[in-house]
Image (cartoon, rainbow, N blue to C red; front, side):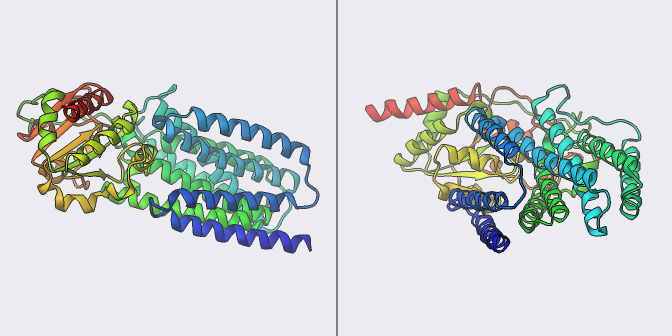
Length: 460
């Protein structure tokens, strides 16, 4: 009777996961969807704790430690560090699968072929996910490793050899598990090494793809662990995470007009010295006070947020500027590029934190046909996602990548601290266009100045 009740709760939790995932597709329902999925996970945990024979002492210890760490992380993590947090959470899921697979084989070396294969996959995928996620975190934080690609001769050959050994080792282990504990240990070690090796050649420009891919890996590892433990809830949840992660990864790759293989093996994101045609022209700076006069007369304004907006923590004051523009009679929209920021949906989360109305968030494909009618396009901390070179310069590493056509607007304001390049390491020719004006300085301070001008005008 207890087992029947557990399975019924698992089914309810699975339905909540599926409904929550579906509702995640819209920013209007995303918050409630997150709560729905979280409640589903709570039900799944309660059902699992109903299983007979559990040692609750260590479960309580884990529950207390996890709760404390979760609260601290939620309160202290900055918006700029959100990608790093997601990477660590992905890695935690991978580590859990890795340890469960190791424990399962250690205490039960003789099992069915399905369980043995699942154990190998849990350890293999979990190990890659764990060290790969930690390496992604380290590259984003630049803790002991550069955020740029680390490439050396024969790297792809070495990675291919490691993968081949892992696959052959997995086959041999699955056929004769009881006699191959040393081989199993070798598989564990190589999976951890392989996770590092597949992430180090990837640069900051591709981190949104890497994070979504590692998220998919954590789901696949969870599915394999579900087969090891014969737990239907883990199988369903892991499958949902794995499938959605793969779909999201494909969306990210499409947004950059590149294949997944190109992302993983090309070393994109390294510093590139562009040869050939030099960008001619001169950047034209403008003061915020002068930019206000143009904004005050604008009837249509589009903001293009990027990672620099998160660094400056300017999302709240940007929302305030948008409100003033609307009161002044302007139509305000926020153009979101799929790979803006350092993780999928980074800009959506950033703007949601400032309570920007969902209906003002516009996807790239929807805003581009309207850009020629826009009076002012303000690019805040974004770089490569508005670089016109992607449309016409075949020598550019971002050639073919769909961009937001900010250059088509009547006037373009670029908010940057300097003329420094973005993640792709190339100059942005938009900086030199006739309709572009550079507003140098901290983005938050610049926008605050613009808001102050609107407040002063309102008083008079």
